View 1: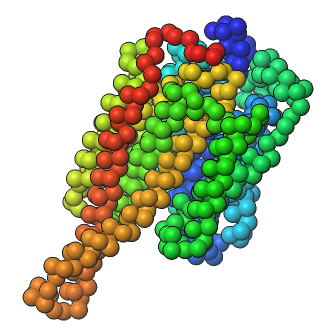
View 2 (view 1 turned 30 degrees about the horizontal axis):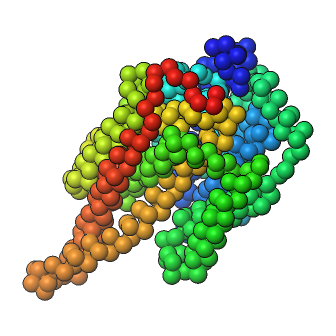
View 3 (view 1 turned 120 degrees about the horizontal axis):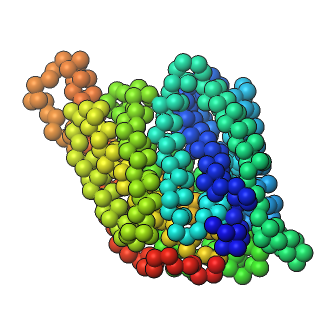
Length: 509
């Protein structure tokens, strides 16, 4: 891998695989922390004397700031310098994690979570751009397999680790665990990661031309994506569009994001480079990544929720239902990396994987209340086994036509699509959960008559409890069926990815 072939490589004189491992550490920490915090939320709320509804601001504050920083992280990388920006993100995330652990009021932790979201939002896009710049096209699938390893491993062990830390120690350790990881990441990044001469030259040329900061574009990003994330996160709790608050968020988001697209097309130094969507492989990859977020990320949250709310599992055991799938996915990641581009085209792998995901989610929709722990684990295994064959081909295909100098912008937008898909999916499923639960309960109650044979008050209470349980379970099955149908609809879009000749050099590189 000669330097001439990879002018933007972050490896310098070091082995590229060492760089890949180093920059994966902080992303692993960020993804892990997100899943751990979800498990510990109830304990945090109790310690801070916050209501259940108020406690959701601990999650919402992080998601909103994260949603704002992700789409502009490519621009910030160019402005600040890639290594410097990455280290700032790691420092901010680590420091705010420690401050979260010291919080004594709800609004203190919300403030620190906003800072944590800002730091965490820049990590994944920068890491992906480093991978794309440090490895030649033929090795990118294997490199993205390593990146996928961190993305999959963290959610698999996060709920279990979070439950154990909270139960054995306290919720404070959910955040304090980031301190040693963050320090190690900073030290390794400082010693081994380089900003290449080409990267420095591009930044110097940009500054010499005169930096025209896109203030208006930045404001549109903050208002548009901030309002959208609040709308998605609070939609069900705020009673949907019957709430003036939600309607206002919807209008602000729609207007700001619509104006943003037009404004950024014509701005010479856009804060969010929407012009990249003119590349066919990138545009299709973003749509597919949105679908991955909507289906598989949403399903990841549904199964533990089902286990806890209806089957009586504690947080740790429900988290373990994801463990078997996590282990299998880790083994499949390298295999997918070897297949992508060498044996099968990305579009073929994606099409088969989306079809397989649809079948797996349909299988889950056929479970019964008699399902065991192993039934749940196996159903999740069938879902997650396709993730490597989606994530790696999409990530690899997305950057093929993109000029190397724009890899950071492209990675930011691709991560935005994945996060946005997950947020939309969770919001949609949450609302569907409430509506379908009422529907099923009403239909089941219709069959209860004075002749049912239950007269005692205790008997009626038990019967209604059974009806509620059955209605809830039927609702979850409906949700998995909807996700299955969504995956089936998305599958043909994979065939729109351009066919890539083996060993081809990307256009614009």
